Image (cartoon, rainbow, N blue to C red; front, side, top):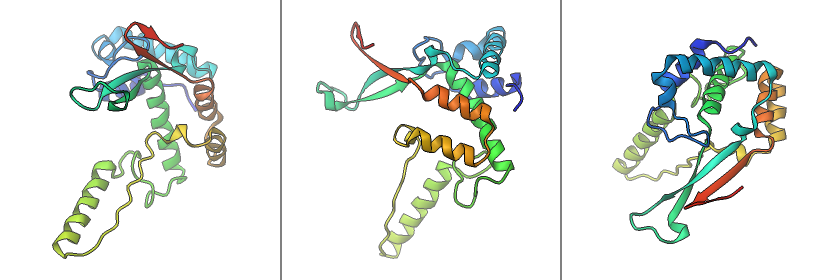
Length: 201
């Protein structure tokens, strides 16, 4: 696979929400959206990591932030934690992900009659939700029964054995550059959580 192109990085940054919270680096998408020279510098840096096939250690840290589920949350079970990742890593892996999806689709390694969401040009989550909503409406109108199973695999990587992911990527002839970058990213991944002035290591 060829090196990352500037247009790929630009496209990822263009599509990103400027209001997204910054991760551990403290840099938001807004910086790269409105500072073309910094975006160019980011591209130079991302190309270095692409060539080396290694991910910087700073990208392997997620910042855990507590978000209240209710207005006056006081107990721990009234909060959920979200992971804020380094924006630079998100830009890099969004570009890699786009390439990977294109590669798999072009080589017919994805059965688009089954797997659609996440593949460019294929119906995604909104379309799936619309179909399920229509089925529920029809079942109500006809006073019939309907069983619906909704499976959310968005954050499944943490629960799927990494060796299985690597095996699958190898089986589908994904270039070693992508396989190695994915494996490198998830090796020694850490999450730290802050509460007040205290941050875990």
